[in-house]
Image (cartoon, rainbow, N blue to C red):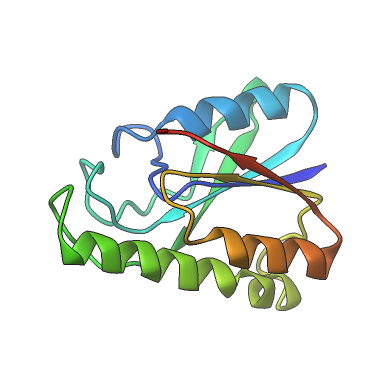
Length: 142
């Protein structure tokens, strides 16, 4: 199955503290699924602002691709710029269907929407409906 793991704060190895999605993607890969991590291009948990590494090594030497949604740069864990970055991410997630139609991304069978904020979720629902994908909303940071 093609599984999109959408997490605003995901980071490739060595680029930030958001490596949890990478560990989950590796586990999915071990069960013969094809994960894609969709993350923001900029966020406050990155060590390297605007991480550009698009792949990370996964199970048995397979790569785990990242797709970065363009978002504004900000540095603090609070403030208007962070909120606007969240809205940038939600808007960018809404454009992922066009990337599938253009052949840039593979159609998802399952979309895991991992929250710290719910702004992207309405667009995830719309994309899932358009492609007949199942949605799993992973609630975190209660």
